[in-house]
Image (cartoon, rainbow, N blue to C red; front, side):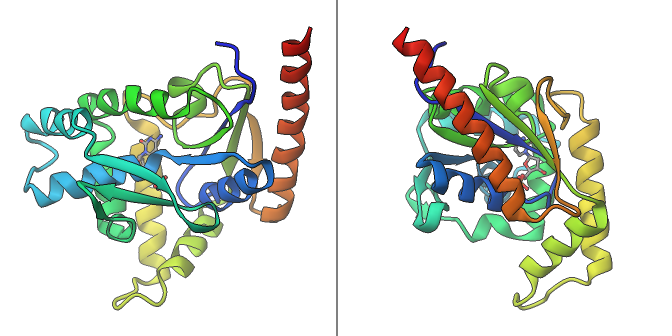
Length: 237
Ligand code: DC
């Protein structure tokens, strides 16, 4: 498909800085952000509320039905963030707990769940002018994305970031606990059979262990502007 503005795919493991980087890049470029992790997290919340364990056969059909009746809506929020609505209820905070992180990682390994979200993600992003963050965006959801990046950082640095995000909560976990949870999520997200976390072909690797977030953002913005210029000149010729 030929687009006037590119799709920017930003994949990477938990705590790699995808969300912060995607928001800042989108703000600089005037793009919207599609946080695909929020979609998996919302399915995690909905299935948990419905008392559906990940092992239950009905879970896939339940997710398909939610999506078919447009129960999940992503809306642009303040400062490039997105608000997530489930049947009209704002669940943006409820989906960010450590329990929902773990549950999203577990149910995202189930093929019917991935299949149910695949078309929705494509519809939301295919027009371009969008930064799409996730695990399989450059490899499976938009293999034809014009710009692909794979963000990473050491396990210790990523766990530290997640730990800082969780301080201020009523019962903050210890740093060691967060590190174990992030390592477990890395393992599950990378080892699953369907659409595992991988650096997609053609994706530029950006390691933010020692690189500041501003530098990562700058590199992505510069690369995308070059691609925009190429698309515009292609459209004009
Ligand atoms: O990016 P996040 O931490 O909000 O994602 C939560 C979980 O959702 C993650 O552990 C794996 C899953 N996920 C996925 O499998 N594919 C995506 N494109 C995005 C998220």
